[in-house]
Structure formats: structure tokens, C-alpha cells
Length: 320
Ligand SMILES: [Zn+2]
Ligand SMILES: [Zn+2]
Image (cartoon, rainbow, N blue to C red; front, side):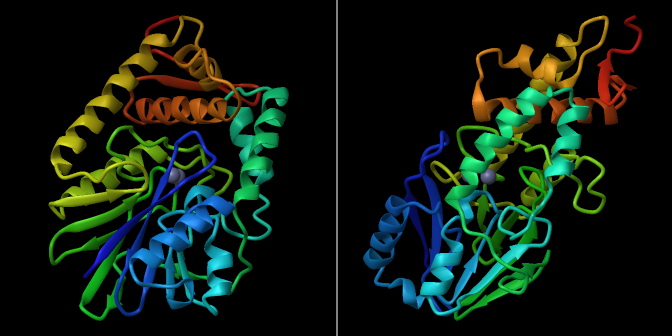
């Protein structure tokens, strides 16, 4: 099975994104890059270098529905005469009418984010979503965990690896233990556990970091020899990365607990103490990071949480 990485420019802080061409029947593209002229041109060139045209694509599979990964999916699908699009049902970023504003807003209010800040985050998000087209129901099919995507010379197993987003998926070629992991595994940085509503009960918060740790451990059971991530170089030593990630998460948790003042603090206050320099979109990612670590510490019984009005306040036990 020929897995050909194609790296595309993005207008985002993260830098270029990797998409993967599976160069055999049915010709499949895993992720697409953002909807920009530059990414579309680079993708066309990458396909051409591999001996393919956009029209040859029969299947578009998305690791997750962030604009840097899914933005071109709809236009490619149309150009490739209705290639099949597959994405996990717990993703929402690609859907038309994903009116989750109220749910997201409620999560941010609970995290202690002010109305002003929420309005600023929304403006940025409205800009980011211009880098992707949305699908109507029926224009894509849901990926299911453990499903085998069949190819002429073998298959790729779909492994649901929630964490970065609720519906993030990885694709495992068991024959040689190669994994395509999207933003679940990035060589140089630990992926952000993005603040999301729980897909089963949107009034609740998705426990992104706890889920993420399970996903990392699950990928480990495949004893990967090569992991292709959504950004940056591939990973040859998954065990080293796994241990490094777990250590980094542990250290960040200790830092977050250490930052909690006697009087307690909201996730927003902790995010400002963690990342005082951040502005615009990074404030949302910073509060996501704080919430994820506070949630995990709380579920492990290391800190206490109580509601103060609509806001959650975290405290170290025994400190009052
Ligand atoms: Zn992402
Ligand atoms: Zn990404």
C-alpha cells in the first residue's frame, strides 16, 4: 500500500498540514487541507507528482473536522464527481447548520470567560470557518470504530481516537503497523484538547484529556512502527512520544494545581496565569488547555470544584 504524504500551506499559526494519498484503488485522500488557493494548488501538484488528478479521487476520509484538515473536502468531492466522504459522527465542524453556539457559550461561561472575551473568540471563529465548506446531511458517511477501509492490496482499520476533538480518528495498517493519526500524534507539540460539548449530552463538557490518554494508550496496543501526524514529521518511536506526552501532561497538571490560589480560581483565570501573553485565537486554546487539565485533576480527586453562580471555581482540598 503506497501512502504518499503531501504537505500543504495553511494560513494558521500551526503552519503546514500533512494530507495522505493512498495511491491505489479506490484512490483515497486522508484529509484535504484548508480552503485556500495556495493549498488547492499545492494539493494538485502533489497529486500530479504522484501520477494522479483530482478527478481520480474516489474517497475522502477525514481525521477530524478542523478547517486545516477538512476545508477543501467539499470542493474536491464535487470536482471528483461525488467521491465518498467519510468522517466520524462526533465531528461537527464540517456540518451545515452546526448551531452549537449556545452550547459552546455555556461551556465558556462555566469556565469563567467574560461576555466580551466570548464575543472576541466568536469573531475569530467566524473568520476561521471561512477556510472550510460545510456538508449537508447525506453528503458524507459516518466512520465507525474498528471499521476496515478496503483497498486493492489490503485495508486500513479505523480507530476512534477522541481527545483533540471528540470524533478524531486514526487509521492503522496492521500489516506493517503504520498509523495515520491526524492531530492525535504530533511530533513536536502535544495537541490541544479543544473545549467541546459532549457529543452524547451537549449540555456537558467532553472530557477531552481523559479520553485523549485512553486514545494514546489504545494506539500503543498496535505497537506502531511509523506514525504520520497532521503536522510536522512522522514519528518512528511511538513509545518515546507516548512517554513524553504522558510526562508533559503530568507536569502541566502539577503546574495547573500549583497555580490555584487559596480563594480558588476559574479555568479562565488559570489560563491567563498559564499563558499571560496569549491573544486572540490562542486565548480560546489556552482556556481549553486549562479546562482539560482541571477536569482531569478533578476527576482524579486532586482538586475540588464548586459552582459560583454560572461559573466553576476550582480549589485545592484543604486550602481555604
Ligand atoms: Zn485539529
Ligand atoms: Zn491540525
